[in-house]
Length: 325
Image 1: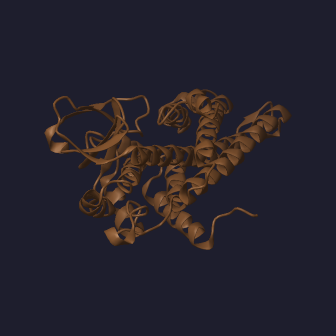
Image 2: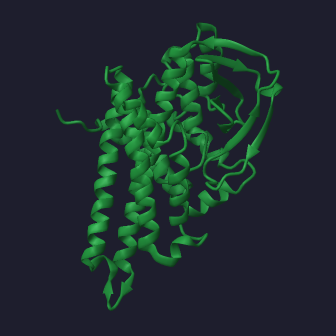
Image 3: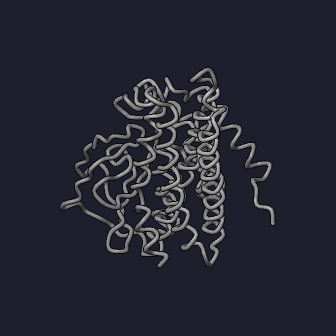
């Protein structure tokens, strides 16, 4: 069987990439990540209103697009490639959690997410967009709870990777209403894990393209860096890591989307491989760019920081491998 994106999925990827090329170039990314919000709210609304990014996993009966995790993966891959900061992953995970919630919660909350309201799930101390979420869910004791976002203390947590917005949410004495069980929590965690691998695949591809382009232009000892055999070998290994990451990430997304019996194992394997592959690619990107890579003006340092930040979300590589054993 040949596994590839359909014509519609390719068109979705192309549409998102074209928009991000115009609205999320390196200058726009820096402006967004250093703003008070940490992302471009106008771009997020455009993604929601014109492409329906927030509505992808929301069923049609709740005013959504009724798409699958594979389509969401396509979008996240493009967002990762552009280093675009924003609440797409957080809202995707919240949507996945609500798909296993009770009917009342689905009716009330899913249409709001589909319009672009920020939603998130609190798993621990660091919560994706926890200080900005209008819909706040909590995963605790193998249950899913709804919390009034306006009734809890939420504090932005500065991080090395400025493209990832984290916050501390104080749930002490918070009134929590159970809306889902362990199955809802597990599904949300799986979707979040796959979402991270999608961001990692897109970023890995971007890093490889940057590195190959730079080594073709940079001349050393009278020759382009890309002409040196040792560097060719290193970039070839980067390509292997990118394509292997894409293959296993797509396979895991398809398995989760279709409820395949090996979905849990594929998700763990994809998370472990993609995290470590991107960390290797990030390190090589810095090494092969030389001194310019550690300057604020160059994207290489952003790649390196995000590579390590993404590897901490939804389980580190060694933790994911442990679940396979």
